Image 1: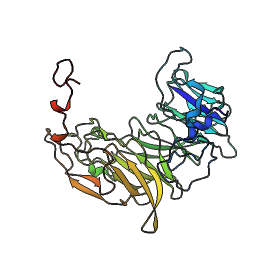
Image 2 (image 1 turned 180 degrees about the vertical axis):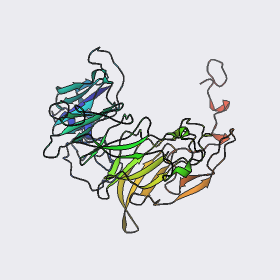
Image 3 (image 1 turned 120 degrees about the vertical axis):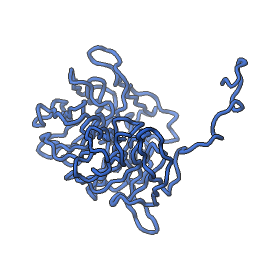
Image 4 (image 1 turned 60 degrees about the vertical axis):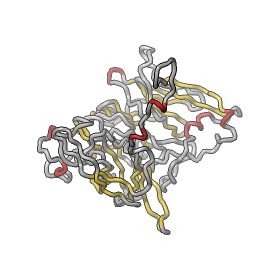
Length: 404
């Protein structure tokens, strides 16, 4: 519910600690970012969430102390704590940006002092997950973008005032709500969806005009339409891109988006027979046009709520002497799916494995599911009677058999 900032006792710059995250992936070649900056949700387009800063390290981490904190959940007008926060603050050119309970703020990273604030009033709360920074284009100064339900809002990065020329007074009403961090590339601001119509949309960072749209539920006659055997459009719901952010291969111009399970029911799909594209899928889109280049569905006809909740990380790996551009997607299924990020083809193999079928009335589950050959599961994906806790596995307390 607050931003904690820590520092080493030798009075080194305290805000550098915010960017000291462990990188899980090798960094893909991207535009250079100053080491002290954290300009987007994942820090870079590849989603590494890695900072090269080394001021804080194992030798001095025990000496860190609190420098300041800022309450993100406190409502400005009422003083009440209105809820938690999942925001990843941005740091650009020595200024920190974040969303709070009822406002967006710019802070001095060294002190936590507000540089400016913009309150949303009766428009509703801003996304508690993140915001984005657009550096400007030479004619228009830098802007901060964030969402509030169906609103995409642009503010001047230096002033906190509504961005001049962006839609209606700096506020664009979108077709669907989104509560993640907008993705910025070039002059595009790309947002996902948390309501119908599901999909991904790109807007012009200068004017707010919609540039393209990718709908995650195929329309009649479109690719994927045949994976929904029922012709009733009302049975095609959800498949939203509610993930906090997106990742992108700038060299190939590919944006990687992920989608949740189909609806309207998470655990029953009798009224939506078929594999249900593009639910539970990663879809590579042309960043310029929104055109689908390839897709991979991690779960066919989901009845387990196995949403794809985060975009993939991108990395380059040498395999048999050849550098292969890959992406790694970790899913709720307990598997990691490793694909060639240019083609979508599995790098180490993915097999369609026969799976048990449901006997629920009118349910028609998929006969197979895609299971990676490598790597092995990264979480438990099955159990046997031997895994169940028995009375002999527990400790008796107070004379109650089996009480823990």
